[in-house]
Image 1 (cartoon, rainbow, N blue to C red):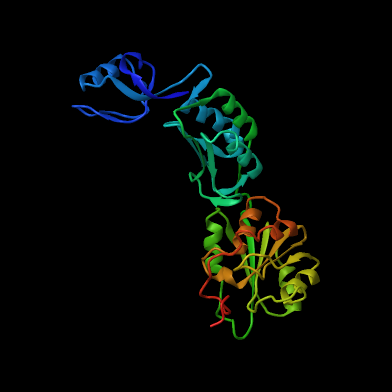
Image 2 (cartoon, rainbow, N blue to C red):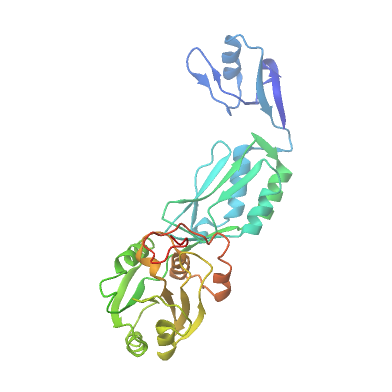
Amino acid sequence: MRFGPVPLLQAEGAILAHSVALPEGRLRKGCILGPREIAQLQATGRTEVIAACLDEQDLHEDAAALAIAQALVPDPRAAGLDLRQVGTGRVNLHARAAGVVEVRADRVNALNAVDPMITLATVPCWQRVAAGEMVATVKIIAYGVAKSAVAAACTAGAQALWLCPARVRRIALVETRTETTAKVLGAEAITQRLAALGATLATHLRSPHREAELAATLATVRDAELILILTGSATSDPDDVAPAAVRRAGGTVERFGMPVDPGNLLFIGQLDATPVIGLPGCVRSPALNGADWVMERLICGVPVTSADIAAMGVGGLLKEIPQRGRLREAK
């Protein structure tokens, strides 16, 4: 692509680089100059214009952006994403439904390394999004880019984006109470979290904060696709009341503790093949915490392992929650 001053008599088919004011209105940048536009420019006394001229080996910015977006999401319906109308070298991708977005960062990085004029920006991997929310934007910075670069970008970024829609609907919450926490409830904040993904509390049970009683309560949970446990007293050890009760009920505990703060005191496991999350007390606040990252993935059918949680530390220092009993910084 050639960019710079072009004599008006040679400018037909060129792309106007900067908007030009006219006696009536203006010519907008990015328009393709035809006989009418050139006549309008001549009427202003101009003899040349700053423009971009595409060569045979170039693609217009709109064609390039659309080709790359289609390579990212070759089957939009299967990927759960919509490609919006192309314009000014940009195509935006939006979620068809509520869910979490899988982003293959290596492919995004490879695409962005092909040519500085080709860019792709996305939400973070596993970001929760609402239906209709933008998850990525392809933007061609110049008015045109080499066809070979577009082809390379398409290959590098192929199928880099995917929406995992919410699948789990039936969720059970089991809360324990101590004498000092009898009125400290978390169902309201949890219900709001679940509603963002179209899920509801199908079962809400309460138990004394003792291992045997909690195990017995867990054994009564039926037909749940996800079990949440919120204890009246913080879980502080893998053998504390809640994890011990899960094992006593016949389940397993895969991991206790996570490198996300707030959210450190979370544990995950299974009970009769149903995922179990032992929630940290910070879920009583509506603020983002580590439990959100685990719940959202599981509700969207994405397995969460101990290794997955171990990898959450980078970016895991979240905003402090004033409701915490013990803040990070001692006063």
